[in-house]
Length: 210
Image (cartoon, helix red, strand yellow):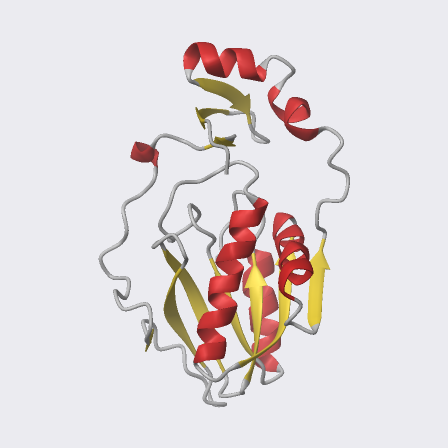
């Protein structure tokens, strides 16, 4: 079972984004005296959705991939600061939006760990195919769980960094949505959830066995 907001709430793809997922394309001239620059790089995941990210290019062969957390984006402070710190050390970094988040295509889904690990797999393979050495994957909050799941499945990245990842999931779905969440979803097709700011989010339901 997965939960996602109605498609109408997802912003359509922005026209200025690169359309070719197999090419690097510079969108902002943030070059500095060391020759580093930031480029928008779009990667296609296995579901045909465009994943949008920012490459902090230093010219190094090695590359570190940075993953954001729940309902977050590549533009949040932890991801920007991590990529910037690596850049200052001469190490290229790539921070991107998982499908359904930020500028990436797709619908936001609740939970969704395996699919985010698959998104990360698409990103890793993309850069490996472009002769880059992915030396580390870093995940913040829920992204920390995504990198751990990825590492347990693929074992091709030697350094895996989990920053404040979730470790106690005993509350589970019932703890977040209430014990009667299934009944409400079956009756109404959605359930209201109060977020951290005190506002109500509507979580729409779709039943799936995969």
